Length: 146
Image (cartoon, rainbow, N blue to C red; front, side):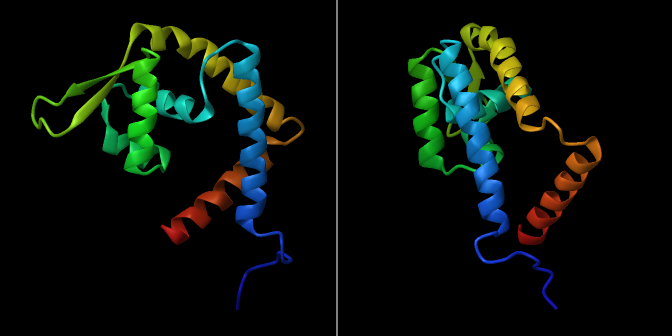
């Protein structure tokens, strides 16, 4: 028996999509107000590099759920902004490792503070128990479909 207690128009993807879009819009607004020349898409790539610098483009595809052409375009634009540089892998010249520049490292603290502020705004009035429940449910949905 299906475990779907949603009415039409209340699908998981609709609900999570609305929340995700609202968070992204708010964060982009904060970046713009702070004069950070970053898009949300660029920030998502930098975020994963701040956690683990020197990832390959394929690893960034996997981490950000983007396809190869999208990551290539994002890395190209981040290179133009002098925030990343491509370095050919020593073990396999076909693989580019993406490394942060000093300029990108300087952005980390400010960008992450704005992201944390945005997430705090989004979760205002939501109990830690509800947050954990939501994370568990969404992880289960993801695991069921991957």
